Length: 278
Image (cartoon, rainbow, N blue to C red; front, top):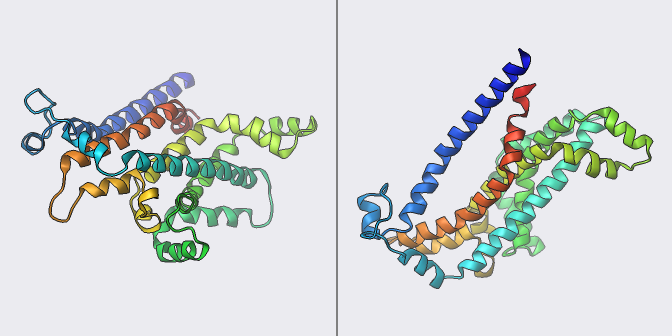
């Protein structure tokens, strides 16, 4: 009876996740479809599919010839992957320390890190900009990686610490008896068991970083370090907007996010539904 209830809860969780995924992907569908249509067709019937009568690749042609789109794309990849690496590595290490070791101030330290979830990092934009100017990191990808790492760490610590508390103490103690160091226990025993949680953190951290416009505009507006989101703004003017180019640029920018989402999707579903079968 219990197994049947657990199966029902898992199926329900999967159904809800699939439904919301389809709802979330509908705007993506509209953007991609309209990127292959003429400007007139975009405004006349935005939900129609590209047909021979309205098919037009002018948006992609404009994107390839105006601005350095591939450099923008590369900058976004470097910033996103570098930030994810720092968030997952340092977030997992901090979560392991908070969940494994008992020391004075453990709870306060966890609450302090959790404050980063409730207080937006953008409130400190002026101080962050002053800090980057003082350290000479303005107009560098390093500045973006540092800011996004700080932005993603609170959520990573909050989620991963809860999962790491479920790892068997007997397993970790057996490793210590066998002479394994704490680093070996962390990397070889604990991390493989919390991969679903790591994938969940990666997905929820990756999308805001890739789509962010605020910090690239303030910290790295230089042409050689522009991200894809900031680079797409070149097609948006005060009086005239090249919607074909904007939609084409956004369609190309969506592809890496979808690929990374598909790579992490299985572990993401396991991480989200882990609590549904307890």
